Length: 208
Image 1 (cartoon, rainbow, N blue to C red):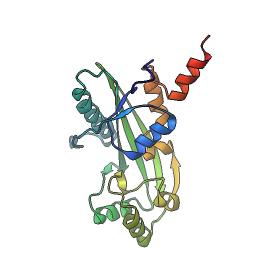
Image 2: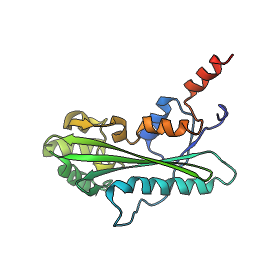
Image 3: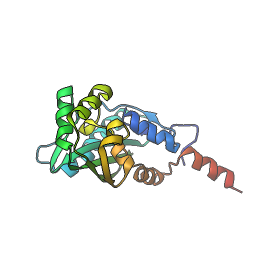
Image 4: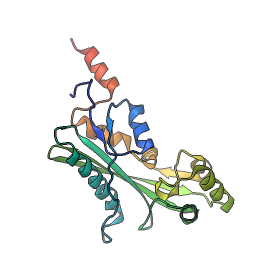
């Protein structure tokens, strides 16, 4: 098990939602934002895109850690409608158009997770199905104007107003839609002997 006084791993993401989820679980970690493009080959199946991009993010940060052998965790989340990837909007017009596409339909949210440590690479993917009701134009405009979802795949966050009022059903992991399948990430980290701080304290207190 890693020293409790040290960062146990590096999160290659500046996503406030991923950072918050991992902190809520009780992990101690370092954040290094991976400044890499999120391009992918045109012929790559939509389901393989999140792991492909997450691997790129992790590799960039891992290469920067010359004398630091901490594991690097990266993730990428995409919204898929049919076989079309709905990305992150760069303008109000794009955000409105994306939400109009998702309105009244089921889409899939897929997150790819990559954990790199030395020469070992672990990956996993989680899929959640999400159904929006028929969204009214004024609902879409209100949400985009007040919440400005420009850093979010599909132009929405499930935990925000549009999720509360517009999502009528999901199948799968709620936290995956927020950007991280926490239960799978915990299993991956545990395989390297990395536990939340509460678990470290519990293990320490139970030793005889």
